[in-house]
Amino acid sequence: MPLSKADVEHIAALSRLVFDADELADFQTKLDQIVTFVDQLTAVDMDGVEPMAHPLDLTQRLRPDEAAADIDRDRFQANASDVADGFYRVPRVIE
Amino acid sequence: MAAATIAAQIGALASGAVRSEQLVAEALAAIDTLQASLNAFITIDGDCALAAARAADARRAAGDALGPLDGVPIAHKDIFCTRDVRTTCGSRMLENFVPPYTATVVARLAAAGLVMVGKTNMDEFAMGSSNETSFFGPVANPWDVTRSPGGSSGGSAAAVAAGIVAGATGTDTGGSIRQPAALCGITGVKPTYGLASRFGMIAFASSLDQAGTLTRTAEDAAWLLQSFCGFDQHDSTSLDVALPSLTDDLNSPIKGLKIGVADAFYDDGLESGCRDAVEAALEHYRSLGATVSKIALPNLHLSVPTYYVVAPAECSSNLSRFDGVRFGHRATECSDLTELYTRSRSEGFGDEVKRRIMTGTYVLSSGYYDAYYLKAQRARRLISADFAAAFADVDVIMGPTTPTPAFGLGDKVDDPVTMYLNDIYTIGANLAGLPALSVPCGMVDGLPVGLQMIGPALSEATLLRAAHQYQQVTEWHQLTPAIAGEVPS
Image (cartoon, rainbow over all chains, first blue to last red; front, side):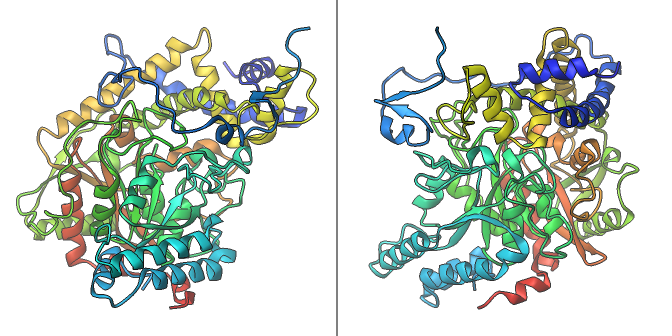
């Protein structure tokens, strides 16, 4: 089933992206092509095949939880557009 | 000299025939000459590079060289974080991002004395096969500037092919080192997943991304790879294995090497010129004492659709960090937090990145997860098992790297699925986490084409030896585009 305009608007909202009408139409066309292309997977019988999440089937290694601070806050925050007193500033969240 | 190989530069530096400052000055002059036509670099750091070169020369003069590579110029793909040097990932989102730390790959190469001359252009967030999705404009192929150098490591490939530097770093998520290496006529290596640290390498699809090299020769690739591969505690998927020397064995003969070829790599999309070049390369291998036999990869045809579920899914998660708050582009005059996120992302990302984020969001969304994401993970298992079965019988799988030589800039940019099919031969190795490389193996209408080799996990030494032995009896890797002649020397 082709992706509808409403589908694409829903996916955009979940993705935290916004489009004007022309862009939305273009994304609808191209996303539909992509989804149609990957749909060929659904035709293949893969019952009983174990899903593979890691290419070498390894599990994640853990390290001891020891604090190591080799970067300071000011250096990190130098990349933020709006900081004050060591905090990140955003539009008001709570009225 | 800058256009020579790393091996030649090592020799010249050791003998005192050349100083690092000369090599770096030549590389910077070459960037200056070719930037307008190739657009291979995003950020050039001339003063810093010359200072590092002079420091390398001083160390060597004092008998304290960091190793044979001390003073060799290198370019880094702009996906690797470099402390105090802007790192854009080819995106407006990170146009002004200055990392507070350095990627392990870059740090290790710096510790070996390599001198960074600049950061190379790339598809935005490494999402593309033509370098046309870069916010900083496309890169041109040095063999024909109306054509694409491939992507996403297109800037690194063009810089090496044009003789600006002898070596550059790249990353390969679905072919982003091997495909541009093939289209630019150079050697590109993607190591085994987990062998090169991903720390400080801006994430696209974390279970597929792997750092590697773009060089003229396999020998040069071995020099660079053994300088940066190996365990890193800062990458939770780093392999904790002993790394064998990659340069020691290059000259051992390959008599008895078992090569597998699969029909899956010879589909209708493969141009006859590419096919003929690969056939001729296999003949060279037979004459070197290798055997060539048929193997089956019955699920390889599923690799592109599998990849275009898995990679976008991981991309949509990884790129959720770009919210305009802590780093990256931030929209102004937003009335609430959702508007801040949404407008920052919509203004900061280009169309292909948005398409991947949305595809990933869709395949992970409620009601579609089982149909797409879980199914793709199952297909990934089947593809991986095919490779494992093949490697019970052969040492290396060979075939074409790409279906065609370099295509024209603009030819495929409006058709995402056609663009995706460019990576049809390269994606399988990423899904299975296998090492793979591309070496130049011929010319078709004045454009280079590549021979791909895929090996079992951790077989880098064998792959590099096979490539090096081929390069001892062929000259494809020594051809340089006419534009390289414009480089001052």
